[in-house]
Amino acid sequence: MRDPLKQRARSAVKRAITAGVLVRPDQCSRCKKPAGTGSDGRSLMHGHHHDYTKPLEVEWLCFHCHVEETNEQGQYAIGERNGRTKYPEALIVRMRELRATGLPYAKIAEICGCDISYAWKAVTGINRKRAA
Image (cartoon, rainbow, N blue to C red; front, side):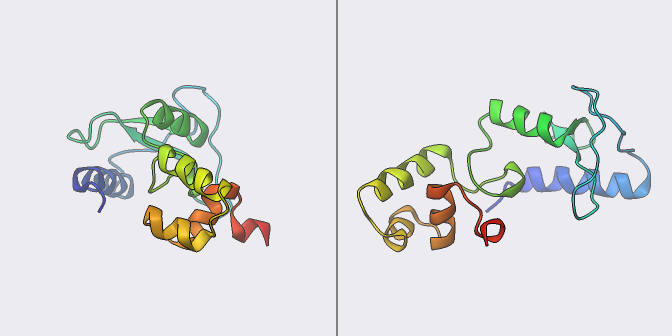
């Protein structure tokens, strides 16, 4: 289950943006580059929390700086889209080791407690939807 404090902080930022209390800037506070928008039209400017107990205190970072920041904090590992993952890098390394022994993805998923598609993506580093 996700961290409820983190969820509340994210929700507070979304509500504040909608209400006009917070305004998402046009440029990253670190690299000063414009963030742009994703293919779905959403802004790639992220409000990064350094302290979830202060939900409206965010540092506005572009996607790349945000991934860099969270990787430094050890929050993200290889895997899911947008830099997010459910599993730590050590588990992904373990999945790759198991695959190197010849185990099928179904068995790797069973051992590691994830679904087969995630095991495949973690081991190969390829997102099936993009590969197809």
